[in-house]
Length: 315
Image (cartoon, rainbow, N blue to C red; front, side, top):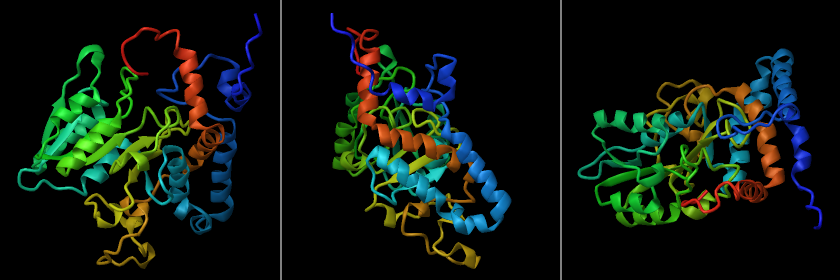
């Protein structure tokens, strides 16, 4: 029998210190820290210590866009379309704050298999006049794209759903959901937290209106790095209710009546951003970009093929 071909990704193990002493199998919760993250965090401390307030002008003020563009390259989004937030709940709240129920169009379609934080957020919008329709999970705790499509009608304002379900790893095909939503005039918001970095994804080709996710998991960027993609042609029309000074075109004018937002995705931001988290995110994003999500996905399938052989579902 011919020897197995060497793993082309094995050399990257050395970039993650924890892998030298353990089998780390919980990147779906917290991705392993890249070796370069320690130096990146030290760079933040050095900038603060040596540049002081000048660090804002050097790099910090536009750093959200810098990191957002690195994420955009991973999820198939154009530059300038991804804003950075503390977490996905915040990112989705900003997107929802751009919308308001009008007439019969007031329904948020979501799924019982989505992350509980999201369901709490959607239900909290009911006090503003939104209606929430939760699509129940079927066999295997999964909610399929067909179930979501069936729930979408002319009363739907937005469909918020996950690309990969967090409990089961089931992959939902977004295309029919997006097509059905567009046909009735509804918007779509795709949660990519469990897919970005491990399942190939192109939000621009899918045509979703919003997409959220974070760097905690497969992007190996640690907490504090949630993101929000906004469809570029939709972006200029949006005025979030959940906003702040970072979203302004001229924030340092400190004008209380200034209402001119930025033209790029930073118009979707609010208060002062978490700069240390941005430094932590960069090494992991750079590794994923260099390796390629397609190659990561291929290895993931190869490693799990025996385990899920014959199991009904898509993983």
